[in-house]
Length: 158
Image: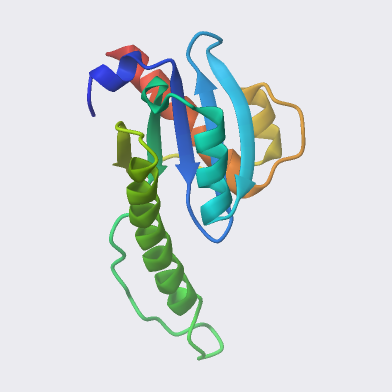
């Protein structure tokens, strides 16, 4: 990761997918300052509206690892969830790459594809505890917030 990006005032974390989560972490406030979810295009509109000067933000997009497919039979001898999971991982990976390209076209120079956080996903209770936000959220918003907080803290350790 670039060291220059660590000094940007905002860290934007995106969890791509059919529903894309977006979290904006404000370094001066040391917390999530904006949280939403939307589709591929609405996330781009939100970013361009929030940041008229794109160089204020570092954008991190969760990039799932290449999926190694193991085709297993389920307990009832039908194909298990592996087929759907393989398709979803490949789709999210490609969407992350396309979203990174689109965001760069909007003028954001600091855009990085990052590995998913290797920690258990947050439920609503854990989200409220770590993010200090007390409103109902969906899984995509929580994943984006977790990504933002994880990388904001990781950069502060350096």
